Length: 242
Image (cartoon, rainbow, N blue to C red; front, side):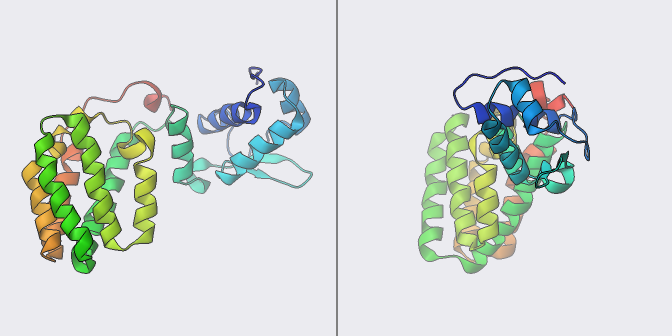
């Protein structure tokens, strides 16, 4: 296939991005062999070092398997890749070619959030729960500014995940809120049912502060599943390109 020559600045980034997108979009299939370093360098009009660096990054994402002195084979990203792939795409202004990505990310967010709320209520550090109650009270003063409420919502959930004491949840949360990847590409107005539920946020904070784990999980479930239960406008552009 033909590749576009790239600017001299950050050449390995451009090579990496084009190859990543070619693999994720299916232009290169699993177990297919990529062209060799020399051929890729000629196609991109770059040196082999830039190609080698790009291949190394693709391997780190689980998109290829590089054999020492041998062929570079494409891997199935659905089997080998992790959230790092989605983050890499989000930073470049692209997303996974999956039509249900927004729904899928909202569902994952809900699963992590509900259990984090339960654990935060069980393990709650008094300093964290006190900060959470204050944040929930302040949250109501931001209505109806959805953009500011969306930012404050992330701050509230960061406290909850920190209070859960679960490092894996914290790392997943950091991935979910990186850039526009917080909830896929859902604009704040599509989450209005969740964001405008000021009373729900206060009930959640109060349950956690009181150590009521079941109530905390229930309130978290109500908040985090609202965007899933409420039909939203389909997100345009790259998500539906599979």
